[in-house]
Length: 314
Ligand SMILES: Nc1ncnc2c1ncn2[C@@H]1O[C@H](COP(=O)(O)OP(=O)(O)OP(=O)(O)O)[C@@H](O)[C@H]1O
Ligand code: NI
Image 1 (cartoon, helix red, strand yellow):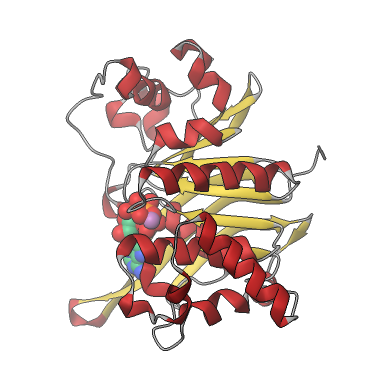
Image 2 (cartoon, rainbow, N blue to C red):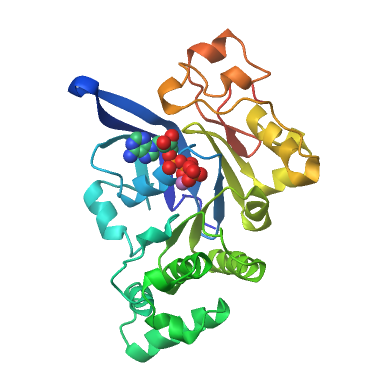
């Protein structure tokens, strides 16, 4: 495996400029410190509760943030810092997205056609074969190729989105919640496919709420909280005891897993974008907190073969 990540996001920040009553412009800083590293041959799972910044990370990498967004930090692909023009070039070619919402399907195009767009080989017979194999694998009837998106059920639409990405031979797949609505059999099929794709030397960023699914196939897990990466752990760390994990939030998540008694963290939630604290985003819930945590955002640092954004993690 190569040492340099194929895709790296360094200290990504995202703000949205908004107009409030009286047309006063203000910048809402929703993402502060997102960091990830994705290596060829690997699956990196990104987990975090709703609103922690998972989809925005995906959209920033692909260059599809709304016009009123302003970003900081660097997105680096194969050693090159990406600007918006370069992102557009790579999008759908070297880097593909499996979007979170099925509304991303083109409502006016039959689904078979949509999937074929992402196939590089332009030979019609090869294209048909690729689509037929994917449909067979995911239990989709052949006639679905001629359906328009509005004719699909939620689970079918999800399978079509997956097929679109899997039919391409992109280097990087970013899958934003690829599994909701799938039956158990298809879910296992998808997870197995992701693993096979990664094993063939490509890279997958898998965004999910389903930490148990993530742990089944991912090599590493990035934990997001209120727009910051708090930890990047190895999947194997979750299989040991909680001492293998680094951040107090990850340790709390670990204890809340179904196979560890569902111990709830507390009854608080992550801070909203307009009420982010000055220092560490987890400080108001953290057992290790002191004055130093309230005043400055901790830098992400390496410990025990993983990364953590906490000054007291050991
Ligand atoms: N266009 C926008 N303008 C202002 N705020 C936004 C915009 N898009 C997203 N946000 C805010 O940014 C934060 C992160 O959103 P994001 O969609 O990345 O969350 P997520 O982790 O993908 O959540 P979910 O698990 O629900 O999909 C949220 O608080 C969201 O409200
Ligand atoms: Ni999302």
